Length: 497
Image 1 (cartoon, rainbow, N blue to C red):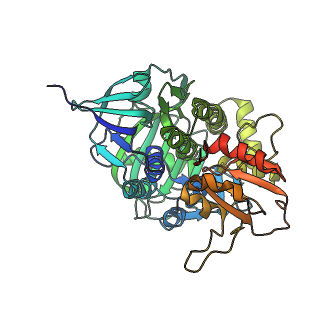
Image 2 (image 1 turned 90 degrees about the vertical axis):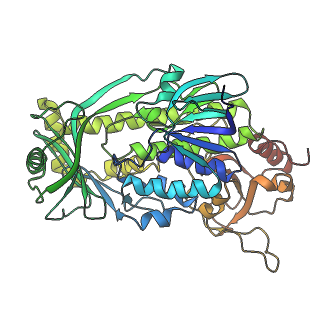
Image 3 (image 1 turned 90 degrees about the horizontal axis):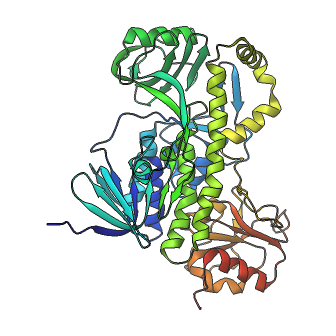
């Protein structure tokens, strides 16, 4: 007898960081969401340890940043290639650092939020079939279950079943083979929270889990092994010593394996009612620690658009902006992380010379490191703006100090004091010095506030800020008709209509 499919608004395949953030956003917005995860239990394959400033801003907009920061160690700089570093201390952000914490801590806070909001997470659910029509997507799992939804999102990693079932190509190449992974203990703690070394022997990366165990990621040019091979303690010790000049007394290897690092990107992040995000859409070398961060930012970009579509407040064109905005970002991350890893692994004389020059003068590349900090941290990401738009459209908004447009009544809570507090409602935020009474028809999807400094840069400017913290629309002294048109374009028809 055929099993009747379960039905919901959105099905997400993959319960990694990208899928969990997306699920939490959708559930918090009142959208029905089910997450299908192939793994029956939690995996120990944590590869990400760096949470960058832009990601922390997005977590702050969900009330999670402080909780996550408490699990790790903030670093004001990131060492990329031996002495070549990036100074993050001057980033124009509330979080001028990179947070070092294992990926499983990120997953935990995101999963707890998603489940509190009502998301359903089904583990041991391996997706084996996918079909879609004009109205919905149906996903079938290996246990014979069927899940039907208005939209689906594949966040199921490099070997994405969703991407393969859609027939979307994943062109690219293997950047480096035979990368060793291991969980170890150390007799001597490295001076830096992230210990990195790269030279002609290979490279190594040592990061703390925070409980006395460390993750080693390493590559030995002279010791190439097949994927899945088990590196020995002696092999791990040798490459760490060779690339860092110190083996830290590495011992007690509790788990180890070998994999290859790919550099790939899907040409399309959307096929009908199905989307790709995170490693299912793009994967790159670990240099710069941008993989998990890029996936989380994919989810933040897509979630509010999907929520609007489910509610009937968005056109198909809004969903298409996910591809237009995030595909170029993925391509840039591929190029920057790829360039870093190729310099680190260089065998040719010209590239070795470049690496040597960078190492020699790394501390003096002020302009390069300042721009590099903004790029790696995600602060510099901006999206395309229509011709003639306000100069701020498409740009990330810093954590503005805010005040309420009107004094709260007795017993009412005061308005948000920061932009990222205002964004916690999952709504658009309208920032203006004037009380704009004509916004009332959109009150269920809009937060209104004023800049705390009425005479500052925004004195005459009205900004409509998207739920992901980027400017959707802006104008200097707009009329009511212009404002209503912008609100209708971005938020849908007013409630009174």
